Length: 88
Image 1 (spheres, helix red, strand yellow):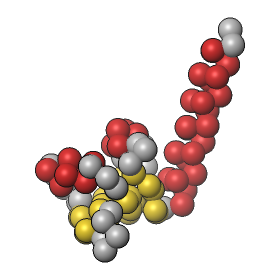
Image 2: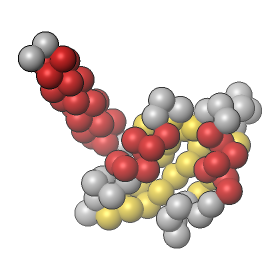
Image 3: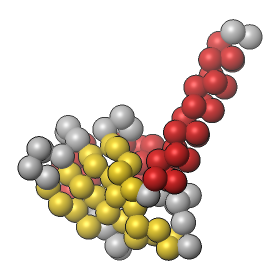
């Protein structure tokens, strides 16, 4: 399904995002507070996750809420897995 997702990028990662066209649907907008809004229209959420992970912790998923929830679940699972591996 087609998904319009919106992220906000902060700090020095803005220049990196602006240097390259990451997806043909990419739209960017510089916000008054210094952050960069990036919007992608993609087919599903799985394809955009690696891009988001590559910019953590300098990116916030604004929309859609279900993508934000998926990312949180993925990250919480990674934390649990790595915390338990440390105790083995």
